[in-house]
Amino acid sequence: GELDALLEVYRHPEEHFELSDFAKALEDAESSLLGGFFYKHFLLACNVIGSDARGTMNRAVRGLKRTYETPLFPILDQVRSKLGQEEDIRLVGNKGKIMAKIEALDALSSQPTDVRGSTNLACPSVASACPHTTLNPLHNSAGSPPTKSRLGGSTGVGRWGGG
Image 1 (cartoon, one colour):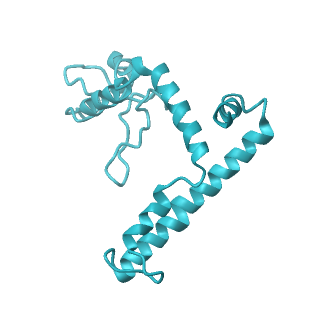
Image 2: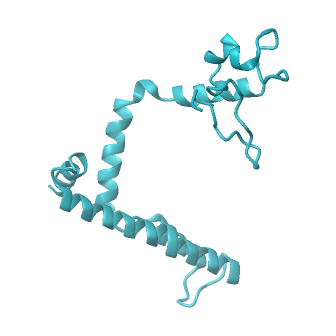
């Protein structure tokens, strides 16, 4: 039926480019309305008259939540859900591994460093010549640790071995 036809379009957009573009345009419109107008309308009403009040159509302001929580095109949501389930099955062996690696890197970044930026305080080499920098993903290609952003988080510079 319709679901199978749309799954074909989503799986092979290059073969159905006009339908794929149309589906993407519908997604964009839905995103703009749900995440934009309807959500902002709800927030405005809460800020002006409160979430327990009744709006101009004598409906509870809380009822506005349904306007941005309910997909405008349920069939497209079903297609994306089906594709997401298929992807979950395909990637089941990797689930949690990426976050575990990120958490391990974050734990490394909290280790004390010496003045050269090396997390190996026993290493006598200068940071740029330290053999441990190739093993430490927190060093960039120049052997320097990542910088901190103004918000206090790592900018990621060098985090994955880049420069």
